[in-house]
Length: 120
Image (tube, rainbow, N blue to C red; front, side):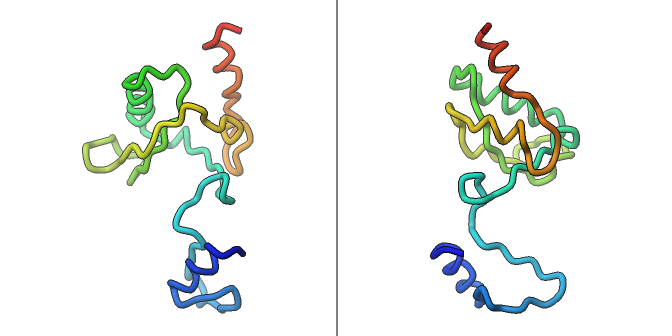
């Protein structure tokens, strides 16, 4: 309940004392990162395989062996086309822990894959 959340609510003509009508969804921030209180949700099984291929290709394009790829995807089950997803950024020091202990989903044991990659 900081300044950013207060301002974002105010822009929606709301405040922390507002009473919402049933079923209304209100966001507190413009972004949702783990570092700003967002939740890690794992949708790996539902994700179309083409997005994993895009992530691998994105990392390869910058010659990264370990890389987080942030994407916005319109429909995670639809095949990727030129207009239904966007690669936002590549992270060369990704937060691996969010994949081991997601708020929703299963532990991906990412650290084991990293150690295998590094041959340790």
